[in-house]
Image (cartoon, rainbow, N blue to C red):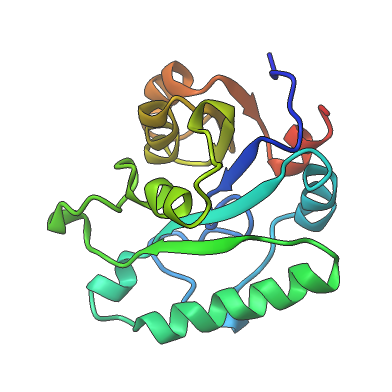
Length: 182
């Protein structure tokens, strides 16, 4: 069940698989590869009416692997932000973990570092009044660690689906289906 949400709530969105199509066994390292998920603009236009702040939180180990640099990912986010702003959608910040999974950093989801970075910039963020939307188990675990409401969007025929079900407070096919529940 969705809690009573108002503008004091914060929305954390995973990028790949939620906002844009995930490249299986690959990375969105250039804006030409950024394909928005179906109805994502409509979804975000609905969600902005309910959440006071929205953030994108994304693991981007392509940087740590040396496949691209932070400048390339920042350009992808700047281009995405331009699209969103043209549609009157404000993302407070795009927060990225550039590390490889093997680096064991504190910012790679499911660890809480990206959310803590957001809270440092916006101290009014209350994680118990926050929602995370993701398409991976690590997104849900990230939210659970901080006491957020966790929303899974995606297929049911994926590895670890039993753990996903266990960690998801809510489940939808995509971000638009979630946004329509308000």
